[in-house]
Length: 133
Image (cartoon, rainbow, N blue to C red; front, side):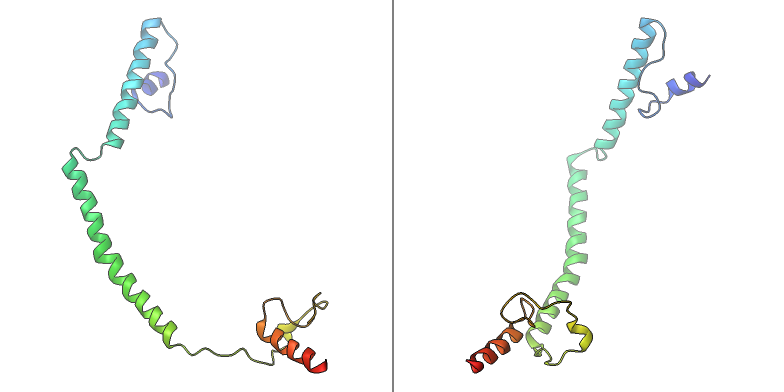
């Protein structure tokens, strides 16, 4: 009973090989399975019947893009550019809190208190070194 129900359902994940039987029965089941798979694939691939319907679907997505995405993104981008142009650039504070400069050992270069990319600290250290010389 179960095999007869399964053979009527043309789905790959349920049955991939024909049931045991005579050569003609197995061939007929295999052909029916292949035809069912091809029909399912055609239904999945060709959702739209004509090229005009596909073009109309593409056009609706383009309209959605132009009417929904760009009116939000372009003003937001311009606003951010405006903020970047008008923003006041603040200098880094000289005295950092003690928890900001926790170091287990000094750095292995000429100015051991300065981190590698801290240009402000490097300039101060170089000025101190030149004043000592």
